[in-house]
Length: 372
Image (cartoon, rainbow, N blue to C red; front, side):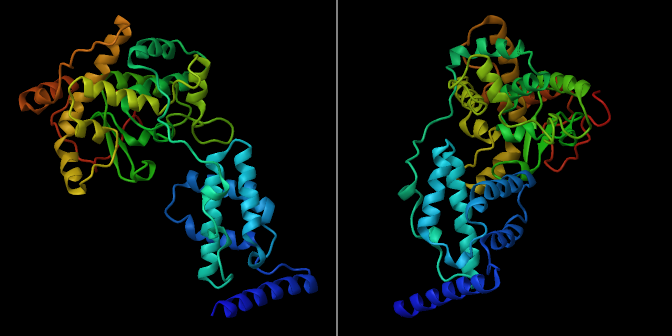
């Protein structure tokens, strides 16, 4: 059986080479198969993610083996080109390039274009350096007041400054923040409906908006360049580059010590120290809970409490910005207070809300009609 498969594979490779020599044409060049795979794969993917994947393939893989007949590509060719990507300091890009190459060959196997997948003949660890798992860099909680003041004084870009200020308040990931659109905001109900396709876990997410956050959005609305993107991009980019905030933090003196994702770690630590329930914090961070039924239940159950927590968090940021130090005492509105219906009702009145629960399906006219 093994000999028969080897003979069949050799015959296929021979026909590809013979045809290329006789006609000058390449049978099933890798780039054509990759294009067919890509069109199938991209369905349902976020457009920016699909564009990044296509660019990565074109620059790092197709430039090397794109014109080769797919049936004659051997494991050593792939094992040779992937480490070259890593050696230029792009380890993550190298792993993704290998993953995509593997997917293309699996597609080719499924449609009878090749007998075996050469990208599956080895593991990533066989050719790439071991990646050390580390937490995202972040400052100590005691350093947060100084960081907040430096963000307030950052003057290289108004949009980057405001993006960083929002990042501290809303608990979103960098990519989820910078691609924000005005249509996602519902100012009357003071919520931000982030659609599933923009979230890491591919599920819709609600961010209750504190008074401080609404003020930031008012300023962004006044500075807007269009009525679509909250953080407009430069040149050919639709919205802000994902590295813009990281570069700003470096300019402030936080190179290697603070990242956009680091704010989420600070928020988790400080809110837990201030007495908030773990599930409440995890829900607002859009982390997956172990039990999906429990998660769906908690999503509705916790929204009034999330409103309390998010306003308390923004008030806390104001306090430490003024005092210059982090108050170790628990927050004024911990879980026990948030569970109290009367306390929630009072806060809803403070925020101008009639009800404590807002449906995730609520529309988002937001700031399109002006910041009221």
